[in-house]
Each structure stands twice: as structure tokens, then as C-alpha cells.
Length: 243
Ligand SMILES: Nc1ncnc2c1ncn2[C@@H]1O[C@H](COP(=O)(O)OP(=O)(O)OP(=O)(O)O)[C@@H](O)[C@H]1O
Image (tube, rainbow, N blue to C red; front, side, top):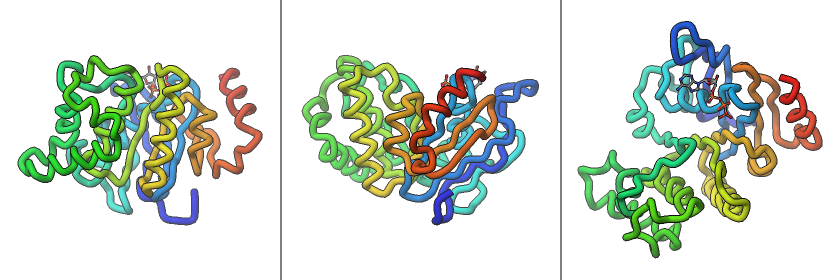
């Protein structure tokens, strides 16, 4: 872990989708403030499940989740959202029949009773993403895959979260759009947001990340500063082929 105290921590978590099922077997992850922490690993190693536990969609059977040192293990996803944690889930999550603007407003649902604040947040987002502003009245379902992904990222920012949990940001996108998405994530890093990134795109994630964890079979494998992985990522990936 880097020098600063971690902002978000998953400590020694055991979790599964049923009583008999063990998906995370004593997994520990820590995200330092203002840094990008990547969680890499082969299919089925428990990366997305870790994000679900961190966001509160799945309760751990053992272990704790800490935000800035406070135990949030028992808090709901809505409370975590209020505390400044946002999740960008894997796969399509826009509402296709609703406009770009309505999709953004839904991202700010917590502020629905404060219309002025919500409107301001939507307009701030359009300022940050001028291309989305041009599309504001279009149905999300009519946007290209890349535009929809940018809309999804923009929607996770509406509440101005300090921690972003990002699951497979570039999956299913054409290579030219993949670059656009990672440039956007780079800008979020420059904002000083804390990012925990789960990714199959190992090279792009490593390029962005300050710190890397790898998981295998639902357990921690190796972890360290990204520089420590320099020249070794190929070996790490090859080791997954033997799993
Ligand atoms: N909703 C679910 N119900 C039951 N089992 C699940 C569910 N989601 C995932 N699993 C199982 O949990 C294990 C870990 O899955 P998870 O999606 O966390 O892995 P992953 O590392 O993110 O994989 P990928 O890179 O393929 O997305 C897998 O065996 C998977 O089949």
C-alpha cells in the first residue's frame, strides 16, 4: 500500500452468493486516497464480487469494509452513495428509453427533493462532457456504445463521489472508443478521486493504476506499486493461464 492511509478498505472478507458458496476467501483490498488501484485477475477470480461487497450489494460473511477508518460493513448501498461511494457496474446500465438528461437526473436520485441542486449537478456534468450536452434530448438507447459508456461514467459523477468503483470500463467497446474511456478515467484521477478499477484490459489498467492487486481463485495473489510490476505483467498473466 502507498504511504497515505487507505480511504477504502476491504479487510479479510469472506463472501459468496449462497451459504455453501465461497467466492471471496479472506480477500483484502485497500484504495489509497486520490490514487487508482487496479484489481486484476482471470475470469471468475472474484473481482466483480469484490466490488459488489465494497458497494454493499453483497454482505460479507466475515471481514469488514472501512471508509476513512469507519466501519461501513452494515450500511446499505444508498448510505454508501450518501457517503461518497459510486459504482459503475459492468455492462449496459443506461435506461434506453430515457433521454441522456433523464439518465443523468436518475444518477442524482438522492437529490431528487432538491431540484435546484440536481439541475446544477446535471449542468456541471454537461460542462464536463460537452459531447453529452449536444445529445441531451436523445434517447440513451440511440447513442453509440462509446457514447453510452461515457454517459454511464458521467452518471456516476453526478453526486460528486470521492470514491469510484469501476467494473470493466471498456468491455465490449471498439478499440478507438477504449482510448476515449481511459482518457476520461485519467481525468478523474487528475481530479483527485479515489478509484478502484476492476479490469480485463490489463495493459490499460496498469497504465492508469498507481497500485495493483491480483486475485486468483477468490484469494489475494500478488500486490504492489505499479512500478514493481514493470516488465512482470506478462508473467503474471501467463501464470493465470495455468490456473
Ligand atoms: N450473481 C451471482 N450468483 C451466483 N454466483 C455468481 C454471481 N456472480 C458471480 N458468481 C460467481 O462468483 C465467482 C466470481 O465471479 P466474479 O464475477 O466476481 O469474477 P470476476 O473475477 O469478476 O470474473 P470476470 O472477469 O469474468 O468478470 C464465479 O464463479 C461466478 O460464477
